Length: 364
Image 1 (cartoon, rainbow, N blue to C red):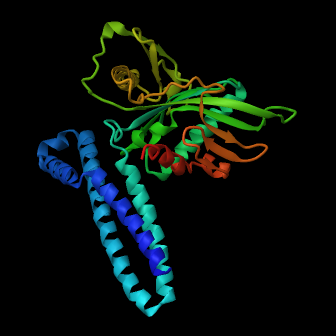
Image 2: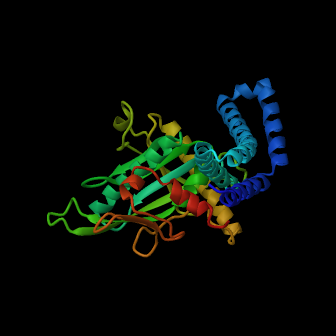
Image 3: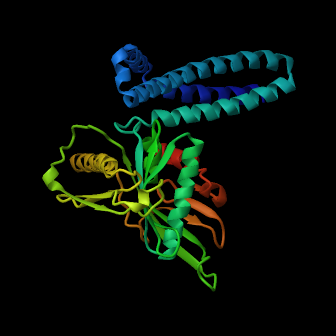
């Protein structure tokens, strides 16, 4: 790597890191860390273990982000100093190491850049993902199951919790509809890009002639919001039905009328939960999801100029956000960002970070 190439690469990374620092607002970040540290020192915080865990996790994430910026600054300076020494002696081994290090630093800075884009009010929240089969019959139900596997693997790779809270099998195969709770810092921020219709083109395993088939599946993503004070749910506006669970669950889940379906009459929003043994637990969970949906709806109504927090896809031709083509060639293409990947098998194994980053970076 000659001096000109190094200087250009180094300045590119320095500018990118400065952009991260400006967007992150280090002064505010330091203030947030100090405030969270004070909260953890209050002994009363541990009276609510769940809330305490959220606060300590948020503190850990903010500290890690802050330290990452400082570490990258130090590493860039070290690389600059090392290059000045190595270029003078024309040490090729060291120059190759410097080039490799710069590429590693670029990847780390790119990751930090994405985090700075997650500044929405609910981006740091847990998320609810809802799946439903669209046009395509049994093929669509199988496609929903494939999508759920893809997102479950993505969540596992990012240490996000994955919990199925409602599940309806397809009549012949696959999944007709499902609701999943995803827990983790910035779960909603990362996964909000996945809301919409996903289109699959492949040779049908359910067709005797093995013909090419197009299927659709709708994905809805909302932040899990609790005690928001944005909406107030009137009990008189609710229609509550109980029924026997039909999806996966623990012992006796499927033998009692523990599943709960809540219909919010004014909006027509329906929420079903069946993963817990207790009808009361399922009702509490359903009300949390209903509140989240109503908050998302309220914000969407009040701020038309902003993107809706929840996208209820029509799951049909012409509405897709992403197409997954497995035959006659392999290509996954996002119709919004035009980002594409020819390794469809890898994408379906949960490697969707590049698609998410492209979506989040679209407005940069």
